[in-house]
Image (cartoon, rainbow, N blue to C red):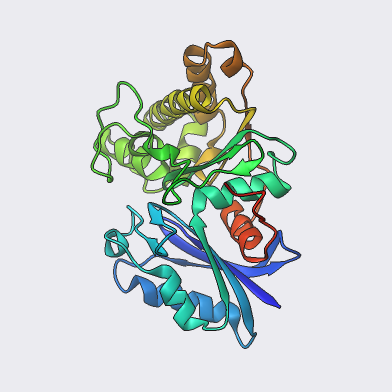
Length: 301
């Protein structure tokens, strides 16, 4: 039995072979091109599959998604923004494989619940802070999926004081303020000369004033969003992964300060916020859990 996990991100596709249900090996990545997006994704899957007989595939995708119809519509992939039938396309490529599909945040929550910081935790929030911002919810021991599969989409919680247009069509979403891509755009408008979230974090950690301001802005908005989510969900832990989340104290210090300011109810004050320990892509790990059947009916609500 050979199982593949696929992660559809805002800027990259990643895929690998699932081993032992919760380990993904031989991971390969490609940039998401501006056009012929499926061709790039298809080529990656075929490259990972090689000459192996693929029996199951787990797909975790940036959202929105519709798990009922197998459609993904990532806001940051223009060619797919109006909807792409990813499950049907993958099924055509691997006709005999069982396909499992979920939003990346649900996969993230599954991964953290099985092997990460939410293991043994009945109520938790898992987030990714990278090119975009996503999330998944563990409630009473189960991953919450919602009506269409988009539950936990914390990137579109509206944060106060930030009237920034979002790709979703709204204004003031935390993704529009605090994601890596959004933070870079803001810093460039202030005169910063870099191009990536990694460069922005490096600049902040060496004292660049614009970079520090960008990460302070992002961390503050993240803290506001997490405080709101904590009041709504009554969770024990919020675990945060993703490349931009690894920016260090310039991001985490203002995030903690915003949490202290806004999470004032007794039960929200008890919330612990930690960085993910899962390497090699938590979304891939969660997609692997989905595909191998380790996610049972007791895991998903």
